Amino acid sequence: MTKAMGALSDIKVIDLSRVLGGPYCTQVLGDYGADVIKVEPPSGDETRGWGPPFEGDAASYFHGLNRSKRGMALDLRHPDGQAVLLQLLASADVLVENFKPGTLEKWGLGFDTLNERFPHLIQCRISGFGADGPMGGLPGYDAIIQAMAGLMSVNGEKGGEPLRVGLPVVDIVTGLNAVIGITLALHERTRSGKGQFVEAALFDSGLSLMHPHFPNVFYGGPQPRRTGNEHPNIAPYEVCRTATQPVFLAVGNNAQFARLCEQLDCNELLTDDRFASNGARLCNREALREMLETAMASRDGVTLAEQLMRSGVPCGPVLNTSQALEHPHTQHRNMVIEIGAYKGTGSPIKLARTPSSYTTPPPRFGEHTDTILKEVGLTQEQIDALKEKGILPVALRA
Image (cartoon, rainbow, N blue to C red):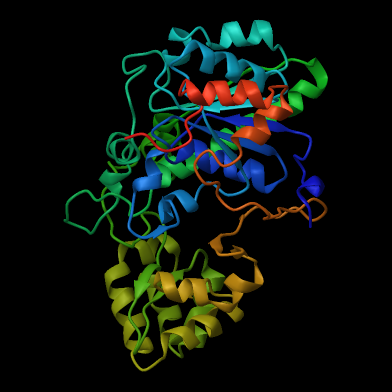
């Protein structure tokens, strides 16, 4: 499969972003055929150093976010570097950046200026809090937004301290929201012929994740609290012990509960008023969990989970990362992909006619600088002169 078959194969993206949200966004675009040009500063994307482990000149963290891109390095603090960026943007459809709001404006490259020069260009900014408002322009980080948006307040064990979710969920969702915004703007451009400014803020994305807790508050519920693995609105919806691997039950209605009781050979629970409805089960969830775990005490968790799932009861074994990667369905869904020595997580977005393709591993620092700049009209002599001046770094600067 070639990149030309991708859904976005006619789209060129200039990626000035670093770290997580922006690179995650542009990796998705690249997986679906966009020509993504990752432009790194002289010091490189910080995540090149976020290891061990390392592979080649970069940490695994960098490798997880930067495939399906070509790479170059450019010093945008210098007017000559800004001039090179303008040459790149002349043939581009999308600009993705996560500079602190006001940085591009300071360089004379703000949206109003770029829009006047390139009216077709879509500019996507990923920021912590947006550019204005009480916290406008302040830097934002995943864990800080988890704290401020309420995620930590509902994550953790009952009676325990607020707990950060163990992965950068806000950054990742912000990256996906940026993809959505960019594709919406690309679709609208087919009608208007005009680009527009797209913004994805970590703060907004963090708040958007707070379902069902915010709706519960909107409609008169109590202040959400930490419930460990328990769902605040559904029971049984939690981890249960077995003889081996723990399993997670997610029983959302009475029919599923009846099938659960049948499979566990504990139909007496169906005639117990304490468990007659979801509301009743929610009020008596500790007693219910104790009875269910008694029925599971001699069962193998992995086998039981598959049996329950096949009978129509949502259930899964609690796997560690290695077990999840080795699961046969992970392989079937093409969720572990390889490009030569590179190994990464596949795209979760499946398009039947124009699927994702994986042909380009993460770029080495400045790997494609010459090729990219020749495509936009620079001669080798001009490129060499810019390298001599340090505008096009050839090695990482400390």
